[in-house]
Length: 377
Image (tube, rainbow, N blue to C red; front, top):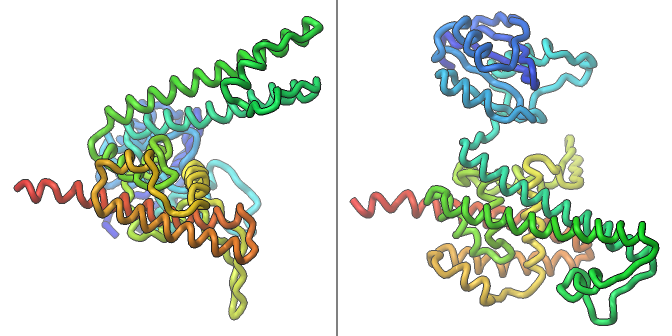
């Protein structure tokens, strides 16, 4: 540990920041509450001393990374920590901003906090765009459900052979003439909302395509590489990259599996070993994408036209990993189903192993990019 370091714990809220500092000598002091404004933060850092001797931390939350970027610009070593991994005393029943700030400062000094990955401004912008599209998909699903339930309550069913939400289905819904006028107005509003959700998703997907094209070459290369996997197309690959950042920051595939929260929880003691449901810790957006992609491995290994096109510019090593994933994951699914597991349980296990193949391809692509300048020289 470096000498003369002052460890600052910040309990950050929308309007205020509670501040505590832990000296290396052992003293921990409460400094008070300051406004959550850039000017107040600058005054605080100036008051505490040389920026290179200050280490600050605060919990990840709705306030984002603005404070992290400001402290970094001021020369302060700052880390954003995972709030669920902050040590908590089982008997502690009092929680205040002052206590939280003091606990952060002490825990940071002792090395008990776990930092999270912080994206830069461009990466966060792309992540917000991808998450906006995810929110739009959820809104579309709700809008469709409202319309379908209205039709169900009125006993209206599409003609035989027309599947839900195909072009023919939407055309049929728009030709319905309902009475009285209040019901017709309700139907028109629900149809308009469904159309609006569809247009919104198309607009966001065009924006994602443009953002991917404008992204750095390293990000585009990893996105292209991940699309070599079955069940991982453009949007899924972009979501994985913006949620994870540089995949090589995980030293092993198991670390990434744990980060996704699809590993089993465990409560073991002595000779007793007890494992339960998945932990669901970590990144929920990433976990959702992996579970959705895992459903593609129910089918036998096959290299279809769409997958061939996605693998067109991939290296032979990446293609080899992708083909190995198809065989291993399909075998895993079949074996679990043969043991009587439910489809949901089997898909969760497949998603966990799929995370390992995502890590392998990401690390391979990053390694290839890193070796290019050396070959050129």
